[in-house]
Image (cartoon, rainbow, N blue to C red; front, side):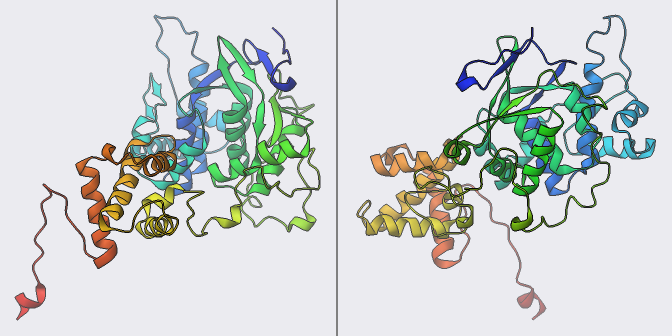
Length: 398
């Protein structure tokens, strides 16, 4: 079944499977391995090795039931086109220690549940999950692009491919559906990359034919990003695609000044955002908290939450009293605990509709502890907690 472009404004390609086959990779698995790479827990070589394990599993998908598969470091090195047996063994060990991989002679498990549980409380993980919608699905990653990126040493190329796969490739009713809009700034925010470097790699993927960029007006470009279709019949041959760069010496350098930098493919010179587009200004990351744009860090930091409370009092939303202040902080604790996709939105609903009765006693105790530390600089202990006795060394010395 060949590609058929139809629907969604003409931005869709449908096929039973991409040429060369595909393998399912969870969205959260891609985010988990990338977050650990950015933290320094694993290296880029480890990320490539983790992706290569999916290709090794796909090669054995039609193995007879009476035969046991065998996984070796030599096959892993041949897929990566770099490294030694010792380096591959150390890479596998780091992936296992990070909770990303279980490696055995006859089986390889790429489940990242353990790594995700370790990252569950980190701010960068929560921010990435909130920005990536439908993050529990599986992506039908084409094996040809998978073999392409595991040979590179450019982290920007790997992160750009991850972002495009998450935004533009789906599997529904037994078919691969390609098509969507993807902003380079969104990929840069989620994967902590430079926006102009992401545009550079996106242009390279367009030139080799893996991506098909569609025409769009400037308003849609500013609001939702470039319309892209992943070419499900892409041929990674020497005639139309070069091998990705093996050295990454220039990849981490500061990008050139924007006056000398070529704009991305099919973009206009007018990059000014429309006032009603709804796109947040990235220069206002550390701006003062606002009731019209409550963010996740406003609920986590007591100082910012206190400023929001004073703004609400000034506008007459809540009365100025200690009970209202405690209810305000308790509502933030409830939103952080219960809200999964949009905690700030849940917090707004609570204080606008006066749904204070949903707050539990534990959430109120945590709010009271934060208020005590904010007002007096003292740590408060919740009911049932045991306070460790720390002897005063000065008194003992006397």
